[in-house]
Length: 312
Ligand SMILES: N[C@@H](CCC(=O)N[C@@H](CS)C(=O)NCC(=O)O)C(=O)O
Image (cartoon, rainbow, N blue to C red; front, side, top):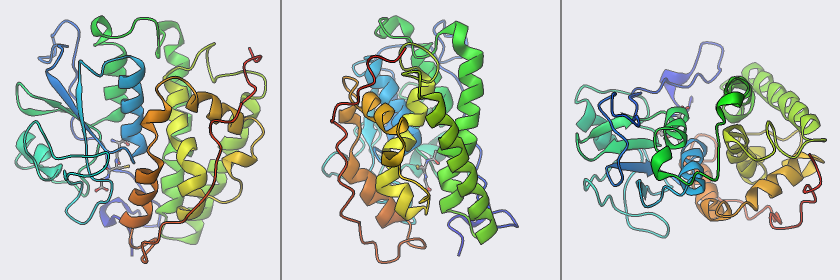
């Protein structure tokens, strides 16, 4: 049985639904959504890689007092993401929603989707979703909120934007979504195509990182963090649960050090809730893991020295 029938193509491949809400917060307010402190709220799951990117951007740009955030329960059932009290997640303090789907229906009562996804950027003033596109939300934090953010860090330097966009696209197609295309494939052929493409891309990235510390600049940019959220889940989840098992990240000479290097950036480790990540995947996808047993491993020492300081 397919995970999401509406997102399954004839040949058994997984085709992700499009983001439905793509309005923009702007610095000058011309979009109708001016950047303001305390106005917008981010709904996330700590488990979700797409939400994780926005969490990291908010954290690194020091926007935590500017944009509020609430996390859903990592375990999802057929009612979708839910707000409950638990360790590292909570009820919704802004709207009192019980389920994330209520945010979508409050924005558009006719809205229908096979999945109501995180992340969601909510406007407390107009009481609607501004955006459910993680790409756009991350960019808004980096650009529109500049006046409120830590200016010591540039996740999207204008001169690098074409390169950032190009590499983001490759990494999205082959790695970020690649693991899902392997894991949610409904045929052997679709699975193999996605899995081989994923490892070819990881091999390329490993070579690229042999003689440079980060993907595109002398410091981590948006693209590094977009890759990070998949790498950090890989050995614990995708290798087993999504059958991406040609190699572990820990087997790659350069990606493994690179992953630890990024993990050790101040503030990042606190955004990695491995327990929620594992419980989410292994307990939520009943067609892939019907027993809901969460594997005990792996033991990864992400705090071990990475030795990449000397690279250019
Ligand atoms: N908006 C994201 C996708 C976000 C997404 O798919 N999030 C997943 C969690 S990792 C989700 O919320 N799924 C809800 C569901 O399957 O019901 C994108 O641009 O690709």
